[in-house]
Image (cartoon, rainbow, N blue to C red; front, side, top):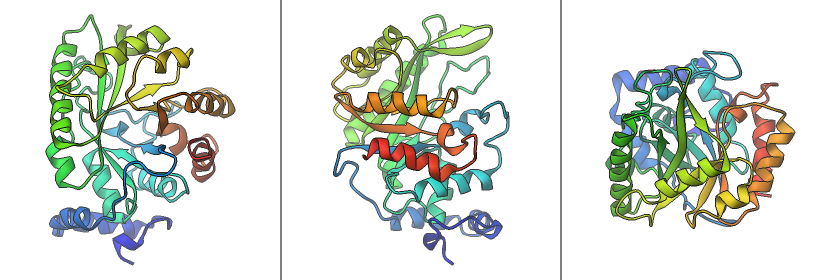
Length: 302
């Protein structure tokens, strides 16, 4: 079975071994796989997107539901991603270069949206966490690899000088994406240091403030999208921008039915075009990835 024929089947150890052999013996095949990948329009039909997020490990964020190393096993993570990507209504995946390359070699991104994650340098728990440096994709490589979307994290902490560097580098990334005609997704937060850890402030006013700052970044916002948390008073939150907006799922917490209800309500608001969800769907309590992904897909593409 070839890598490009694999999509949807359970991953066997030999599938991951094949990726390892390519990386050791024939690394040039990664570029060839990108060049041969079947692409699709970013927006079609109902103008909505359902993206599975998997860029957490690149920032050292491996924890899910109290399991500190939940995302550490690459075979297990790829299996979950391949299962999710094979479900009807899933439009694509967000990942760092290593994950996007693995999935491309498996053939799991045929006809899917591939979103390249750019800044993963603000490592979770680090003293320099607010300095979200650009250590992943850049606009040039996203274009050369034939990916469809760029994504950056923008955490704004008024008490931390690391924010200034992040703002400057993020503005440059937005400008570069606009020049290239590449859609770029900004995930903004107002953040604070609390007991030595970075915490995102999830009040409506804080999210609205982050939207205002993110929307003004770069020399043009023509290709800018926003990726926003679902918080209280979402009507007022989404009224703060004309930029196309996707909702982020966040860490899994609370009852699933309550989470889905909040997503469904927010998806009905003007300017909201879908979901970008990762750990909540990839690591559900019952481990039935297909079922929870199907439930979320029905919300995005009813």
